[in-house]
Image (cartoon, rainbow, N blue to C red; front, side, top):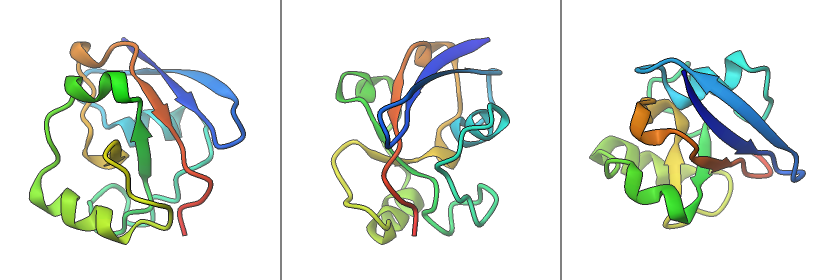
Length: 107
């Protein structure tokens, strides 16, 4: 199992476990954490699973694909250099311990 932290908009920190290959979005939803609307079900067409990856963990991720990068222009909260869509992050052992910050809103 891969363990990572989700920092909710209210500051609460939750530890989440994911299976290798599972999306960050699915692992977070399975853990019962609110914060993602995920209207498209994880298909990279709605930008309602926007999150911020802790700056120190960003280098552990591949750069976003062009479709994800385009969708990040439509997020409800400010796009930052650390912005990603949780549906596009596939969990791997290299992501052990990453910190994911949830924005205040997805709409």
